Image (cartoon, rainbow, N blue to C red; front, side):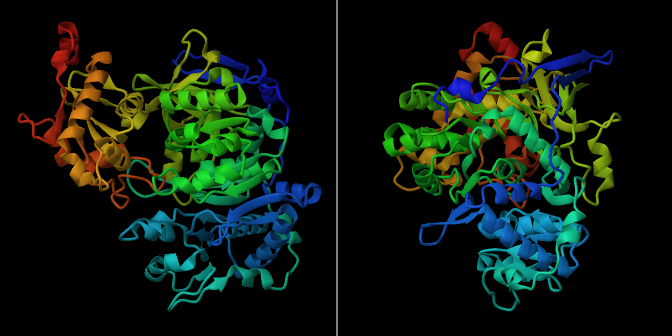
Length: 627
């Protein structure tokens, strides 16, 4: 690896050179000046390439129950994938009878997914939470009905016994790694042991438009949609990633990654980066929760990544460990080329802490990258460079993407045409039609703003979700996304998330989702705090009031000043759609299911569990505006 970090990353003034066109209807087109180079027509072509050129290089590794790493090389993976593919093509599977994978990240999951892709059989990686955390299995039942799978896989099979027995799977083969009472299970090893017929015809029939997988994406209401994900989408987006992060071709990337494969960031973006660039993926069984972060820290102490992906909460928890853990800090920064976050804004204090640790360890800052994308876009649409790096900035369009910023409800909605955009939603033509505008641009539903209104080529910033914004009674718009990000930063570390309320009301209020572990520490409690106990804790409510007043002083406008707030009395419900399996809060679902709590925020009589912000702290003119 080169020593000069700025040279090694190879970003140039031409990396994101963009042309733009302003239209009479108020829309703005952004088009990268560079073209997208040719790319393979099948994702599995990369597996063939690296199995031939680097057969003994580790592709994937995961700790076993004994704590030791189990791994597969590229050559070993290809051999096993072809054996599995041969068994799958004898089972009459197809897009109408795809493979449903109900379990999380594992070597077995990867082998089955790649085997399906080699044979041209679509698979769907479903969130394990739909089977393990849901009380009524409602979402899992819906997915089975929508996809009509011909085979269901569940590794760590006994953990999924309840779902496998109660879902309507009586005529469907189950593939797993252990027997369960009352249900036949085909071991993955049995698939590999079958005689291997010729795969050539089935594999040769696959191409750019072959469906690789269905990715489930939750809407603002209702059940998940199945996003059709093709070889063309995945391969073109990986070429965009390679051009946007040029250091990926300097050396094979090494990832230590927990992000779930049932989501596009982990399963398409990160697995794809490893496979397409001949890298190595260490599956991290940790995650950014108080109980599981120790596993992530253990892995990072042992395996130095070349690029590190996480969500903002994950970066926050790692930043808290770096100052006092010399072994972790040395390993983490030893060969790190960049960090990358997605999904939400990274709090400035976390960003500053990571910069400080990087300077302390290596004498310079490590670039923090980000962008914007969606399951439907393969996923990436825009990227940043280090020069653009600050919270909320999403950069400029990747090569091969034509972006349109369309005026919608006083904002600019970002839309895209690209080879990485989905053909649509499986078996839901009406939703597919609604997802595209009259010119064929996919509507992301996200609002953006220009960093420089006079020069669009300076980049874009995230400006919230179009569907979440609302008007107050005075007719002014509340921009939920930016306000929510500011409040989370202001209330840190006490709040995990916030939900903004105020539709047709006189002022803005908030429902606060507490970070129970952080609140326990802040309050000096001997026993772990619960949602119910925190809701009535006077000391915590006073802490939150002071933080909200601090925010109000800086944001007196009626669309930004939060007048009242309350803590949720119970955790957001997966079954009620208040939270997705990856932990994202569905604002509208929370407001709908907690309508009684919202009503209390606007009651004339303020109850003891409501934080009432003293707006008298503002100047007279500010108070008038806040009202």
